[in-house]
Image (cartoon, rainbow, N blue to C red; front, side):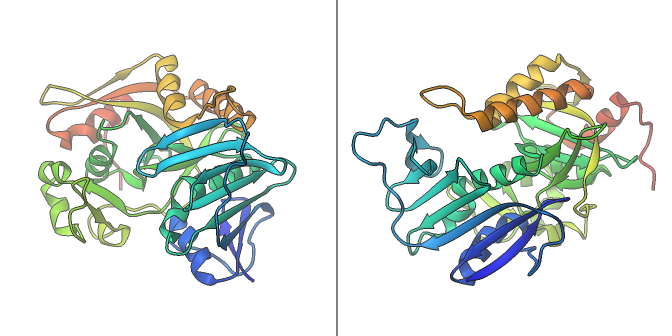
Length: 331
């Protein structure tokens, strides 16, 4: 068996598999940054095997049954050993109800799916066990070292705004996934290191991005930009927890210029919850209720703003810093 450990910034996640390739696929979530030994107390264990994924037994009442975006039909049910999510004949995930353990079974040839919903749910369970939680949000560091957390509806332009803010002098933590904690005196967050998926429209709005694109345009009209290539143009931050300065609700503006102004915290929480908290036919699972509670603590603890991106997003950094009373970016 192969074991590797992933750093959760104060805790460790152990991933076990028969072959290294299975661990390496999961490791893409962390840009491959694994260690042979833990560097912090063990919080959670994940075992990945190749084989026939679990199927929902006949007569079982599903907690959820239907499509999951970009991944197809799925079913989620309560089994004796824990809760099970299955994409029939492709991959299944079991989250233990009694131990800090999860199991993924992936069909041969479907290893790419390890990094998608099943892997993300296993990571969320590990972070919750480490007194943290994963949110779908962008994170950028401010001149004082704190981080701005940006939530946005699908299509609001988080990646475009993230790149524009980074080009404006802020540090890039992540355009998509931030691990947060509300355990200390002040909420903190650190970013998951991953390549960015850039839409064709983003490349047109930010011409400096176009030379950094790699690969072919996908069916979603996207190409990748690696963190390695971005480091030559913007500041890509090292992985470390940072105090959260404020949360921002991102939306698009019809105006040419961008705006940033205070917004009701309830509005930010509603959007963040809709994008991050999952419900089932029988209600909201305990882990998701805990996630909602922590989201509420986070939003309550810091200022909240609406960041309205104009048609020329190059001014986003200026308006964000002005709203936070930071006059200029310091070296």
